[in-house]
Image (tube, rainbow, N blue to C red; front, side):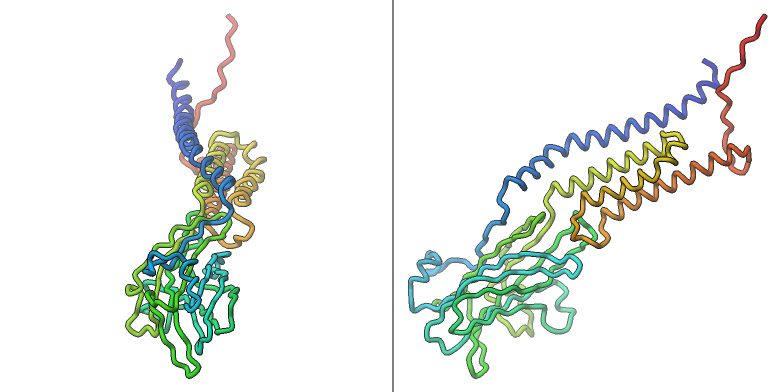
Length: 345
């Protein structure tokens, strides 16, 4: 083997060695993450279609050893039982829709009750006015409660599928008298109890929490409400959605790199349109139809498309330059691979 032949084979072997190393890493990542992804998918399909119900208010007292049913046996007691279920999150407006249902009892009361849900955040002290809230007002005649309220959430939709939304809710329980007087009802009030439960009913989302929060920590100096309870919840995508997004983007990027670097230029030009459509078709698999804004998946796929079209343009430029026998681009001339015909002695 001559030195010229060795020089020609060395760059080609280097490209294939680099491709082998990168392909091996992608394959190893698939093998490692596949069992966890399959387990997450199975849990999501075979598991409960609704989230668990979590109690917010402690069933406690003498109070702490009594269950809700036992407490309600005292017919002279007033109570409000509400179930809060998150039924939707608008990622664009950063609003959570919460369905409030339950029942209320206040026998021969000369006042009404109000449950106010206040969403607090770390930067509320820098903003003027009260934090966003929603109120459920219950008159003595109201026995059944059913309404939907909207509360803001904090999150970054562009991080999909790694987006996460959080909210910290303070609960104020009050008596409203006909003369306009408002009396806060504490958590340990014996004859007027509030029972709350919380549940997540979101498709393709998982809830963390609720985590109890000390109401005094969210109480501002000029806050007109006294919070009886407070809790924090978070919402995020299931693990398999995240793994699926990363793996599909890596695989389509690997396929694009293979086509750009290892396929002949005529084949690349002919199949470039199909390759671009295939790259963008991954979005339909990864993102729900309800998501109509730019996400991290869109940005990653856009970079892959820019890479494909940009590399195609550069390869076409080099090809035309060489075919025209120009010397604008300083490139080492590749010796011809044709061998001289044998001489006849």
